Each structure stands twice: as C-alpha cells, then as structure tokens.
Image (cartoon, rainbow, N blue to C red; front, side, top):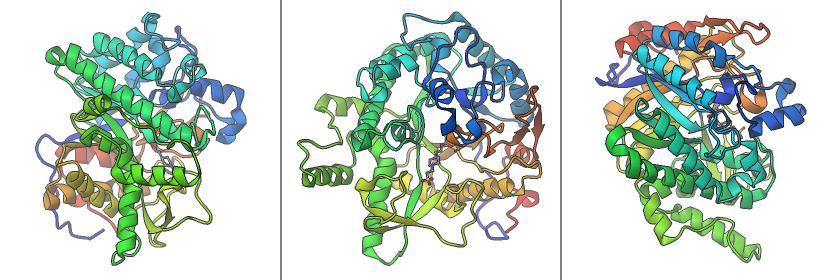
Length: 479
Ligand code: GBH
C-alpha cells in the first residue's frame, strides 16, 4: 500500500456501506418456533466430527433472540444497509410452500421493521446454504425440481416482505453450494464428482432465473426492488505477465470460477471456454455425454439479463500457470487445468486460504467491468479472518487496503461500484471451521451463554469511513 493515497480518498455520493451475515451462521434457535430441519442441522447433529471442534450453529450468536442488539450495533455504525439471509425452514419447515410457519414470517417481519425503524435498508439473501432437509432427501440441488420449490419459496418472501425489502439476492455463492455435492466441503457433504458439481450449478442458475422472472411478472411494478445473485471466487492472475500461455490460463480459470455463473446471467449461456474444455475432457474419458449440462434455447433466453446489479463476494487472489496440478487442491475444479501459486510476500490470515492481495480486487473489478459491460457492482462480501482479538489491526489493514483498491477501480478505471459490504458484523459460525476463524467487527465469546457483543478496533475504524464516506489520513494505509 502506498503511503500517500494517489487516488481520491472520497467515495462517490450515495455510495452504500453495509455488513453481511447469514442465517445459519448467527441465528441459533435451530428448532424453535416451528423451524424445520435443514441440511446443516442434519449434518452437524449426525456427523459432528466433520466440523472443527465438533462445533455447530444450534445457538451460534443467538441472533434469533438478540437481533435488536445486532440492529443497534448496525445503527451505531451508521450503515446504509444490512445484509442477512432468511432461513428457508423457518418460513416453510419442509421447503414446501403450502405449509407456511407463521412464527417464521413474524420473526423476519420484526427484524425488517427494526432495521427500517433505524433507517437501515434490508438487503436480503433468500438462500445461504441451508436447504430444507426434505428437499435434500429429494436429491437437493442436483434435482431440477428444486428450482420450482425455490421459486415458490421466493413467492412467499416477495408476498410477505417485498413491500419493505427492495434489495434481494437469490442465492449466495452458487459455486460453493456445488462443492457440497462434489468435494465434500459443506453440507450435504456428498462426493458426486463433477456430475454433481455441474448439475447443482445448473439447477441453481435455473432457480435464479425463475425467481427473477417471477419478480418481473408479479411484483416488480409494485415493489420496485432490485435482484441479483452473489457470485464469489478467487481472482486468478497470470504468474508470468509476459507469458501468453499464463494469460490465457488465468482467463480460463476466471471463466471456470466466475464466468460459470456470470456468463449465463449476462450473456445467456456457459462461457464458451468452459463448454469447450469440459466437453472435450468428457469425450476423452469416453463418457456418453458431458458432465456440464446444456440449456435449451428457451432457458438461455430466460437466463440472459437476470441481474439488476452485479453482486460480488471476494476475499483473495492466486497466481496461475497452465497445466495439471500434481498435488491438486481438492477445492479447485480439475477440468480447468491450471496450477495455482502464491507470492511469498502476500500476508496470510489465520485461514490459510485467505491470503491478502488487495490489487487482486482492483483487477477483478476491472475484469467485471470489461466482461459484463460495466454493470453496477455491489461488493456483497469482503472481510478478514483472525482469532477474534479486540485489537484487530490486521482486519483494519485488510479493509483499508480493499477499500482503497475499490476507490482505485472507481476513480482510475471508472468501474461502477455502488456499495461495499463487510463480512461480517459479528464473529459467527464459520461452517466447517466451526468457531476457529472470526470475521466480525464485533467480538462474541461463544463460551458465554449470554453471547456478549463487544465491538473491536475495526468497528470504530469502519464507522469512521461509513460516516464520512472518506478513507482519510487518520485511516490511511499504514504499510
Ligand atoms: C463466504 O464464503 C461465505 O458466503 C460466508 O458464509 C463465509 O462465512 C465467508 O465467506 C468467510 O469464509 O483455497 O482451496 O482452501 C467464502 C467461500 C471459503 C471459498 C474458502 C474458498 C477456500 C478454498 N470461500 N474457500 S481453498
């Protein structure tokens, strides 16, 4: 980070700041007030050994009971919006929309009203990885019928909350959902290899487009909201910038990582390079069909143009070179044939995958601008993991440098970034990593039944930026 900010240090008027969270990671109350069982409930209870320290989200931050405290913390930060997700099985315990749980509707009504009473806009994720167990038993996301269940669920949400919710995310990080079907990274913890991986993605894309059209057809005129899907991933940069091969490989890696879900939504179909590589590989393996499903002409038409803004979740960056990794990281799709590496100078957080490369965010924002015709972008997640310490200077550095990268993209490259969301307001349940990694601006002691909330140094730091819209000298980069 340069000492003197060359780029203007002021965010554009109207730039929106928020924080982000997800139902299973904070709510707790896993079986209260009629909530049904979802795939995370099921996995943590039947296979606790899969989660670090056998932790679970049964209580988590207890936000189901303490949501007013969370909103007060958001209010004191001067946030414009608060991103949270709705627990599908609180609304419909089995995932079937003809069986609604009124207490679930009441909970989110109270939360939304509390936010609005404090002048904070809700930005609502419909699905953040907690599929109803009943729908999983039907096959989960590899079964195309789940797209219709999702649409019916979305109809319940628009009908009940759309009068007050104007920002919607259909699905959080569809690529990560797929890893739960192929690489055993998350619930439902299946290993269906690339067939499961791509099928789960296909159904999610169709589910997203159905919900987008449902909104257009039945709700948009009256409710006037905006809808997108939060797309995540590493950014890949060529290891050797002078190598044509590395440049081509990085582009292919980015298409497999991010184009997989963005290309259908912005251009109508899977990225050509992905189609070509997966089909060729499947053919060489002697498979009768490609593991990457195909969309019908009609589906392509329905997919194209189904994002009102680009919702980007981003944490880290990698170098790539061409080739087949002799020690493949099971989290990366082998079909894309690239080898990842890192620069030794890049700081590593407590979470080994979260390596700090702010210039990656800058480059990624420019990539999105060029690839998808300069869409409005909201960064719907960005944040840093540590051990939960209150004097969290590394988190401050991370946020500072990533906000500076965002300013560079806006000022120097005219990227249309309209919002930034910090993951997360509170320390929370970090999926397979249990409570080892903390991402909050606010600390929670998970051994204390009261789950006391204690703001960290980064909370005060973020508050100053949110309040002034300026990344000013007192918060200028330190390194
Ligand atoms: C987000 O996912 C989630 O939306 C959120 O729920 C979560 O709490 C937050 O980030 C923080 O993790 O380099 O091979 O080890 C981030 C998803 C998790 C994807 C880590 C990449 C590492 C792959 N990322 N994963 S690897």
